[in-house]
Structures are given as C-alpha cells and as structure tokens.
Image (cartoon, rainbow, N blue to C red; front, top):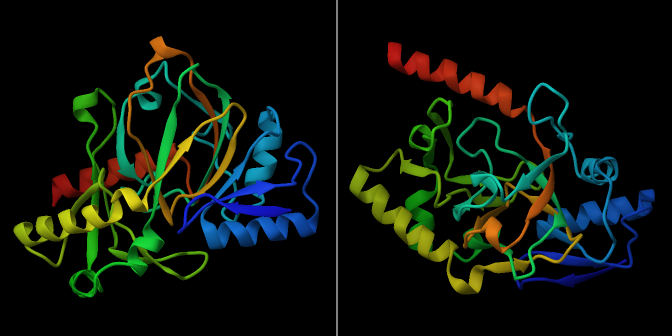
Length: 276
C-alpha cells in the first residue's frame, strides 16, 4: 500500500488496497497506524461496498466497536439530502461533543451524488493545537469547555444536551493534545467570564478555521472516508439541495453508546438541572 497526503497537516489517500476483499493482518495494522497518525483515510475507486463490508472495514479501527444508532440494530445508516440533517449547511463540529461520549470514528461511503460538485470540509484539532500561539495556549490550558445543543427550534423532540470536556483534550487513542473547541457547539470556557470566554473562543475559531488549515473533500461516487471524530472536525459549508440531485452517504460510527442511550441520559440530566 501507498499513502498520498491530502493536506500538509492531516489526511491521506490510500493506494493499492482492495476495499472489496483486502484486509490481511499486515494491511489492517498499516491502515490503523496511518489513521492514528493522519486522522483521515480516503479510499477511492473501489466501487460500491455492501453495508456489511463497510461495517467490517470500520470495525478495524476500533475500539470502541461500531454502534447502532438506536436499539434496533441500525449499525449502517444513510445520511441523505432529502432530510434536513443531510442537506442544510453545518458549522464546523465533531459529532456528539455535547454528550459525555462523543463518537470516536465515522466511516462514510458515497452511494449517490448529484451531477454538480459536493463536498465536506475538514480541519484538525491536533494540528491547530501544535500551531496555536503561546498566549492562547496559556489562556486555555487546564480549562474546561461547555458544549451545548438545543434543537427545540428545529422541532426535534430532544432534550437540551450539555457536556463539559477539557478544552485541550488528550486524544483517547494517541494521547496527543487536541484543541477540542468547535464552532457549532462551543458554549463557554468555564474558568473564564462570559466576555473573556467569547473573546478567546473567537480567536481559537479564527485559528482553527483559517483557509490554510482546511481540507475540502470533493466527493466522488463510491469514495470511502474513515474519519477520526476526536482529532478532526468537519463542516458542510453549502446546502446539499435535493433539487440539484441525490446525495447519500452510507455511515458507520464507532462509539461507546447509542444515540438513543445518549438522548435518555440527556433527559435525565435536564430533569436534574430543573430540580436543582
């Protein structure tokens, strides 16, 4: 196998690997090492994968293992642009940081794409921390960030999600420091007052999302991406309008808990806050 860099700081395209039937012990070990180092693997030109094969490939990168989205065994789901969750622009985020169990890894497979270009954009919290100015490092080291999601206005029957994580999070797999601050869900650095927190967050966002820090992945049919959801953040910077054509990404997640479990925990936490 060979690995071609996608961005100077993260991501590689994997060459000379058969996604349909490959997977020797040596190949899996090399892929896991590349994923740990680069955070994003792209497999291109391998044809459409069955859900079962995608689930098998994703499982190589655990633990944790692939997790069902609910209690109904839906280990492989489809993110589709006929639903708002798969269509609307999304600010930079890592999935489920507003819970105690953010997803560890995401495997996406393009099974339908529109005629025109469509993309997902990535940045690296690992690279952002390495290059962060020293005054900002000093401002956030040892602090905790509150992540929040309130979907009430969107009509979801979900509680308000609130979780706290270290602003600089040791990566659970590599131990490397990750600037764990996302545009979509960052609410407040708890050790700072509101004004100071907002000022610091704005500077962190400017650093994280600078054009030079971004990799825009322009999807091709049957692309397979293996994404480290802790090290990297992603965004949908433009509407995936169904009128422009179908966009469907087959998805597997590596996580310690199902979404249903996390929703129930958030309901209990919301009740506890109301009774405090």
